[in-house]
Image 1: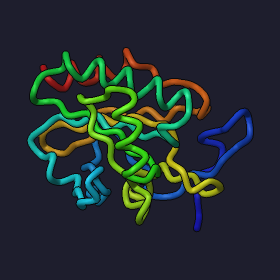
Image 2: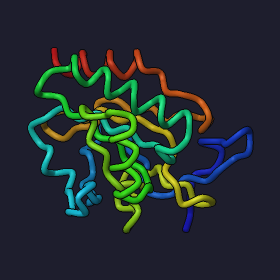
Image 3: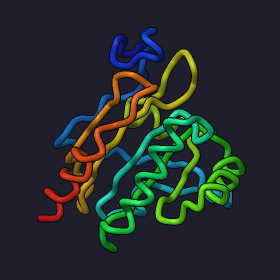
Length: 172
């Protein structure tokens, strides 16, 4: 499987991203992930909402924990027309446990463990680890990608303010 090298690192070591690179202005590709109740969720079901898609390696790591808690906090102030999705390779059972322990209720956690459908569709599947790269995408109500942030070092947090500004720009 061909990939893009030197896009992300983990503790300085280069990793390979596989899948289709998504750019601003592209139609967001559809994908199917698994909800915490094990039901399938197609991205197309969120059409008509502004979507923040937060891609994380694992909720059970400090940076992913911090990132998801931050987006949970921000989601409460974004309005009913915005949905925040956090997608990881974690099993739905682990996501449910983590959300309960972290009191996360404003973010919908989804698992890509089954087919890596999201990871491949958005080009954030890490070949060497079969985890997702840390990334944030903002997709408008019509399904157009309006913002892309691939965090170059997996141990770093994203630029939250840039994401929130992108959402504000889409809402205007």
